[in-house]
Length: 94
Image (cartoon, rainbow, N blue to C red; front, side, top):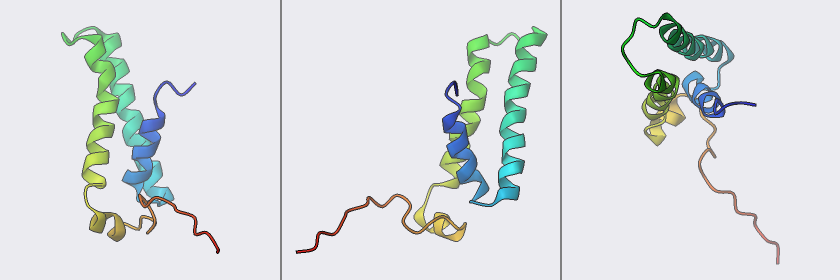
């Protein structure tokens, strides 16, 4: 059961630019946001709704995806695969 965290994994790959060390740092960042969200809920001192706090990791994920995948030139510069986002069409031999 991934509980919707697959989107966070996709954002982590984009954030890490296909480099394992950056992926490790990014996973600590996203995991830290989740931990902060849980601690704020458990503390009970924050007057924000629990539902809004549960959205926090996904909001950070969306921001990372928007910032790190905005333009094609940026994706190429950060080492993304050249065929990323291009639909595959099989060539038929006649």
